[in-house]
Image (cartoon, rainbow, N blue to C red):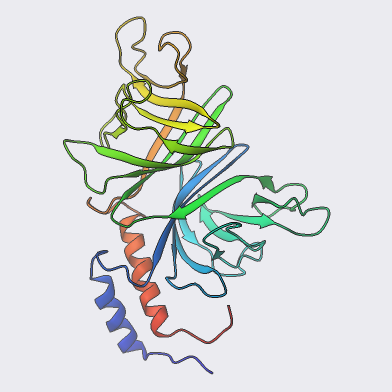
Length: 304
């Protein structure tokens, strides 16, 4: 059966009407937060997908986020780079060996599941920049899960000697008293999955607050989480002497002046439903949802 296409004027009218609406009615799409990390790689963000499972998968229609602190500026079309199919499975193995491809900083990237034959076939997630699955493609740790559009999402990444942590911080959708409250965390530390956000005051007097858009973005309570059965906290050291380095640090339960490590930290907004739209975030997400609604009205019968 051939596709039924809307005429150009009616298509534009429909899309204009859809894009003028707010995010309050995302019936045509789902959101998934994702994070992946490897040697020198820290990526995280949101995937916009179709809302109906077809043959066990959703189709990714847009992407928001950052790779190594550089904004992801667009999802690449199917088969545009590294034979990507842009399919997402909601559980177990999230990706095929086609994977998802996108652009960041003018370069193309693909993340996928390597179940190819030898010399590849590591049965692990990898990132490709256009090389070979058996030599240049890098092993990564990938996490993905559904995301509620009423929440906020921030990319985070911090590094120090022997430390590399990255992922997505989920927050309450609206700020209160000048801060966002972190409600969940997805990501990894040294390629070990972060398994839980710790409640406020549970470790190193954490308050799990983000002061965005102000700087510093963390308090001296910071954010605490669990990875590999151990507790970690990242915070801003504005304590008195012998601390007070006025820098971001990671604590494993030691002393701010001796054992805690100074880290290089990035925390960047991905999506804030209650805020003025961020470049490449809320506007892009609205466009993605509107575009998806238009596409759904003229879907073809091509098999998935």
